[in-house]
Each structure stands twice: as C-alpha cells, then as structure tokens.
Length: 194
Image (cartoon, rainbow, N blue to C red; front, side):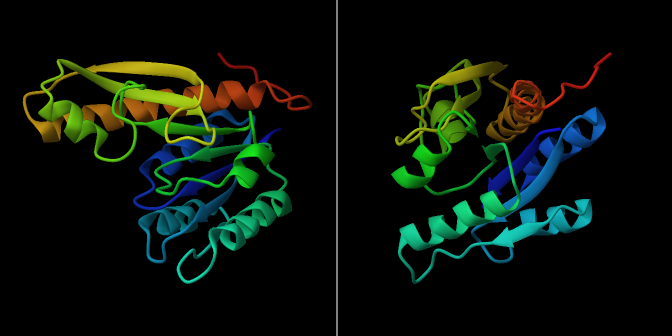
C-alpha cells in the first residue's frame, strides 16, 4: 500500500476527489493534507474524511522555513507521492528536487497553453473552442513539468458551464493518474481492479 499526501490552498474539491478514489479503490491511502491557508475549506474536508491535516503558514516567515516544515510533515507521514491540488504557491527548488518524480499537479488548461492562474477564464476570453485539464510532474517552473495526461473539454455555452465541465474532468482524470502512479511505486502492491 502506497501513501499519498495532498497540498491544497482553498476549496479542496480535487483533494476530496483523490481521497474518495483511494478509499473506493482500497489499495492505497490518503495519509495527509497540507494546507497553507487558515480557514480553507480543504481543512474541513480533511476533518470530514478523517484524514490528518497540517496547516503550514507562510505569512511572516521565509519560504524556506515553511517548506522545511512541509518536508518534515511529508517525511513524518511516510508518504510515497505528493499531489498538488489547488496549492497556490510556486514551490522552491529544495522541496521540488527532494520529491522529483514523486510530485504531481493538476492544472485546468491544456498545457503548455495558459500556465498560472485564471487559466479557464483566459482560454474562454481567447475564444478557444476546446479547453481542458493537464496532470504533470512538478518541476521548478510554473506548470512546466513533464505532462502525464490530459483531458479535453469542449467550450460550453457560458464561462460558468465551462468551468464546471473542466472541474468534472479534473475530478475524473487526476484520481485515475494518481492511482496508476501509486500502483507503480516499488513495494506498493497494486490492487486488483475489476
């Protein structure tokens, strides 16, 4: 059984999708949520799901200190893979390098188009007929890591409808890829899926 940690900053819907997929699959464990914002709904979701959560504050301290705290929390929880799910910070090189090949992110665009924030809105405003979702490994850049998988989403009638469709695609694609990655971790027995 492999163990997953999730880093989130806000609502936590992707965190919940991952946690529920791991529970339904039964082969791996969502072991930890790390959140950087007090009061983020992701913390409430973790409490409801019975998943340990750690609040790591960045405000008023060097980024390196906050990320050392994150690294210690990941080590203490003995996790095998880290999934960013709406974690709205660009991670520093020491944390990224420590987890190279074992840290992934989901992004609401068809990368390399629209990295960074407001991706759905920017694609909508540009008139794109097709939007989407990308899961990629985390590297030192902003949404520049090697792409693992993508899902395409047709433009909806409204921005709101399109955003909902993109989020549904995230909640389908991300858990599937994370489960596959967890299955491939040496020593983690892959569950028998039907």
